[in-house]
Image 1 (cartoon, rainbow, N blue to C red):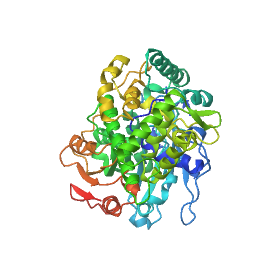
Image 2: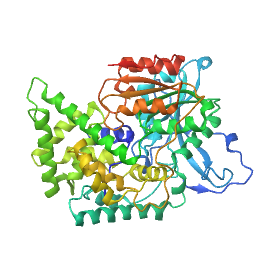
Image 3: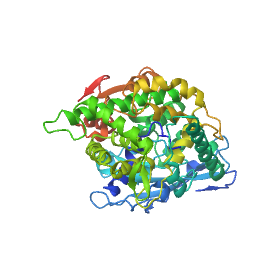
Image 4: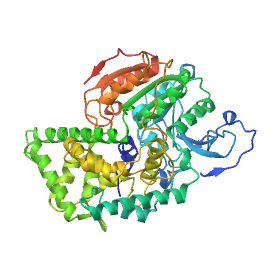
Amino acid sequence: MPNPPRVRAAALTASVVLLSTLLAGCGDDSEDQDLTAQKLSWKDCPAPSPAEGGGDAPSPLPGGDEWQCATMKAPLDWDRPKGDTIDLALIRAKSSGDESRRIGSLVFNFGGPGGSGVTTLPAFGADYAKLRTRYDLVSFDPRGVGRSAGVECLNDGQLDAYFQQDATPDDAIERTELLDNTKEFNEACEDNSDKVLPHVHTADAARDMDLMRQVLGDDKLHYFGISYGTELGGVYAHLFPQRVGRAVFDAVVDPTQDPEQGSLSQAKGFQLALDNFARDCTSKTEDCPIGDSVQDVGNRIAELLKDLDAKPIPGIGSRQLTQTAATGGIAQALYSKDYWEFLTQGLEQAYDGNGQMLMFLSDAMNGRNQNGEYSNITAANVAINCADEKPRYTVEQVQRKLPEFRAASALFGDYLAWSTLSCADWAVPGAAARPDVSAPGSAPILVVGNTGDPATPYEGTRKMVTALGKGVGVELTYKGQGHGAYDSKNSCVRAAVDGYLLDGRVPAAGTVCS
C-alpha cells in the first residue's frame, strides 16, 4: 500500500540526489554518563549508507575543504536520560570566514519526516555558501532516519512489490488488499525496529537538537528548518523558547491541522501546483505537447490514470507504471519548477505507452536508487508520523471524506485521502492530534511561505506565525512555485533570510517577494 507520506520536503531534498543519478543501533551506558560533555570526533565523511540513499561520499567544498562527519550519543528514551543510548549521525562544513566573526553552528533539518540531513546538506551546500561565511553548517539524520538508529520495515524486494500495489481502492476487494498491505508493512516495522519505534517522536528529535546545541558549544540554537523541519523547529521553540537563536522556517507546516486536514490541504496544494504547471505549458508560444488548455491537460492526465488503473504500462525493468506510481511521479515533479520539463517528458512518454520517466520520478519519491536499493525514508516517515499523530482513521471514515477530497482535487484527492490509513494497526500510540509550537519568550523566527507550494500550502504560514505567539513569528511571503522559497534562489528571499541569519536584521512583518 504505497501511501504518499504527508509533508515531505525530503521528496524534493533527499530525492534530488537520486534524481541526479537517475537522468545504530542501541547500546548500554553507565548511569553516571553526562552526554552534554561528550566530544565529537569529526572525520572525513564515508559514502552514504543504503538507508541514507546510497551514492558517493560528498564532494569537497569550494576551496577544497572536506565535509566532516561525526556520531553523537543521545538517550534512546528521553524519560530515562541516563539509560540506553543511540548514535546520531552528524555532518558539518566548517565556517569559511574569519573565525572572529563566526556566530556558531547553523543546524538544518530538510524535512520529511524521514529525510537524511547527512545526505541532503552536501547536495545543497552551494546554496548555503554565504551562510557558511559566519556559521559552521551542520545537519544530521534524526532518530529513526538513515544511520541514526534507522527504522527498518520491508526489504528492497518487498518494497518493490509494495509500491506496485493499488493505493486508491475502487471496491471491497481492493480495500481489503489496501488494509492487508498496510498491516504487513506496519508489522514488519514492529518486528524489525520495536525498540526504537516508541522513541521517534518529533519532541524526541527536538531534545536531540538541544543536546546537539550543547555538544557543539552554542548558547543558542541557530536553525534552518524546511517543511517538516518547520514543525520540528516549532516543537523545539515550544520546549526551549529561551534557547532559540536566529531561526528560519521555510515551506511551513500548518500546526493547527490534524492529519486528515493536512492531507486535504495537500490535495488542494498539489492541484494548484498541477494547474500552474499546465498553465505554464499551455501559455507558451509553441504548442504544449500535453494539452491545449489547463482543463485539457487535467483531463488527459485523468484519462491516463484511469487507463493505468485498468492496465499498467512498462516502466523500468520488470516493474510497471501503475496508476499509483504515475500519481506519485507527477506529485514528485511538482515539488520544484525545475522538474516541470521532466513531467512534460514523462507525460508525453506515458501517452505513448512508455512509463520510464514517470517511474524515475516515482522512484525518487519513494527513495529507490538505480541499484534497486531503498533508503529508509518511507519507513522513517511512517514511524515518525504515527508516533506523533494520535488519530487512527478507518476505511469508513475515509469513504465519508472522499467527496471532499475529490472536490479539492480530482487527480490527487483519492491518493491523499487513502494515505490517512497509514497508521492503522500501528504498534505505538500517537502523541497528539496536533503539535504544540507556542513559544512565548522566543527570539524572532522568520517564517517563509510560498504561494505556489504543493506540499505545505501557503495558508499554513500565517497559522504558524499565530501559533508561535505574539512577537515571535515574522511572516515573509514568496510569490513563486515549488516547495520552499530559499532554494528557489529568489534574490529578495535570499536577502531577507541571509540578512537575518548573518546580521540579525529582522525583515518587516508581511514582506512580499516575487
